[in-house]
Image 1: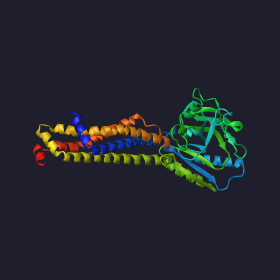
Image 2: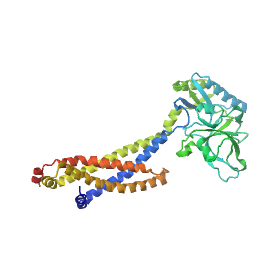
Image 3: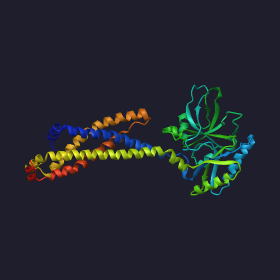
Image 4: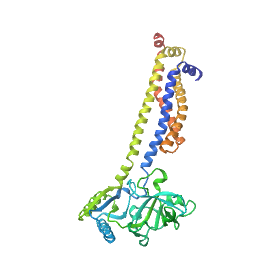
Length: 409
């Protein structure tokens, strides 16, 4: 089919064609970026935390109405509560800690490789754990070893600012600090300057997300310190036997709640923490899915409406062409080709607009650059919608009888 007659016809009716092309361009720019954001948000929400079988995990805090006065008394409270939890049927493992992945609350500190540095090398989520933490979380140790009892330092914050002397790093953090060699056996520092505390790295775990699950590698930068802090408040992470988490949560709360002067607070499953942490991401994804679907429907409706108008305006021309021997397939092909030309023009403009929109999102929302694949997907979707939307009006046009079209002139 010759393109020149179609192009000539579009130039005579350019207002409608330009409106459709502009609508396609805007739709492509929004759809391509929306699809990328949807994928990014859902992928972020599905990231593994490094904790094995999250559905068996929960955390809880235990506070005292009146703190013991001595350090020994505070440690005794911790030991008592640890033993109470461990003794509940269905508890597979328990560990004292200060925070839990995905919980949105925790410690964050700076690490350096040399005390002479003006600034720290990176910030890290700081977990205080003992020789049961790696086991309880079910972390995968890929290098070095787990803590042993001799690694664990008992720290009284009223007497020292130390946070321990032995550390386990996540793989992302280890590679960030020592990209060309193993981190095991190396010394790193908490802070900078003469007040920095040295830490010896004894192991590397594959993954342990931060409590905030930040975007990108920042969500994987975590450090576990072999430290036990002297305080009566205790936070515990508990792994229940498979399928028993809900019952174990209730039984642990009941066992701890029976102790006079003691309050159990913040009991939450890790599964619920994940839902709460990523609620906004899922909401944004579903909102964008809804907007994308509605936008595509509006674009398709615009193409259908404009094509229907053109068919009604050209009934005489169609009848003349049919009388001169044009087949139904020729009429159908004419309108589809015409629409593809308009859609293609809109897509070309839409590609430029999509890139410009992505640059704005990258600068304002710290999103990664839009991969070319999403531009290809968006273009394909708009082309298909253009063909499908125009097919109905084009088919009706091809069905016009030459005699009826001529009499309607």
